[in-house]
Amino acid sequence: MNPIVIIPARMAATRLPGKPLADIGGVPMIVHVLRRAQEAGIGPVAVAAGDPEIAAAVTAAGGTAVLTDPSLPRGSDRVHAALTQLDPQGRHDVVVNLQGDLPTIPAEYLRAVLAPLEDPAIDIATLVAPITSPEEAAAPQVVKAACAFDGGRAVSPALYFSRAAIPSGEGPLWHHIGIYAFRRAALARYVALPESPLERRESLEQLRALEAGMRIACARVPVAPFGVDTPDDLARARAILVPSG
Image (cartoon, rainbow, N blue to C red; front, top):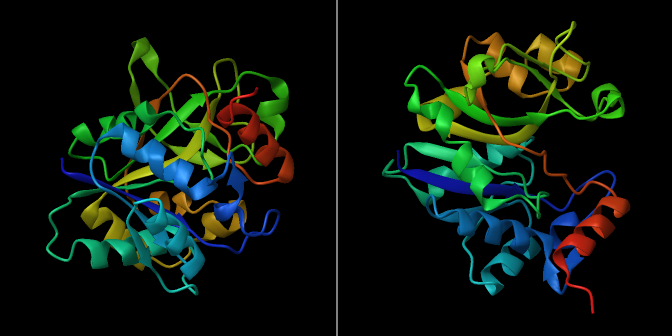
């Protein structure tokens, strides 16, 4: 595999407008995410910026940014648009789509998300972590993946994703982490697909791929990193990333 990491980011956000440039210890959040991706060492890293101010912040920090059409509806669309500009020759056969609101993500998680693609039958790889409380299981903002890791295996096919606590019955539940590693051809196919019925119903993009017959597999990691969506999340990120005293 020859991966490239692309981080989609735009200023418009319902609950925390302008969050890519939110200050965390004097550094914009998008730059923290960029650094986590660079620390992983799996390939070049770039930001697919929906706004010039994001691109400016990234380049000022020594990173690579590509301006994408702000009207593109989803992060995956921005990633695909940036990829065509960054790598028109098709050298990179795997594209890691890393959300721009995960400033505390461990670098090793970006290495872990590549593991499911060792199986040539898998189109898209992603991550899950164990759900540890009834409150987490019940929260609709926590997306659950129906997968099983029998026998201690590290990778499992994903059969469904939902905001409901699935599957029913005794056993672990898995918190989906919104990081994806696409085979390049799979990303091109995915962004060309129309929105699907279950995608609309659950408001989950990955269901479009499953409904189209694409195969998604999950690698498991110990703990789900939190995304910065609210002012409280931002305060938590600052507490973790900015040394006290």
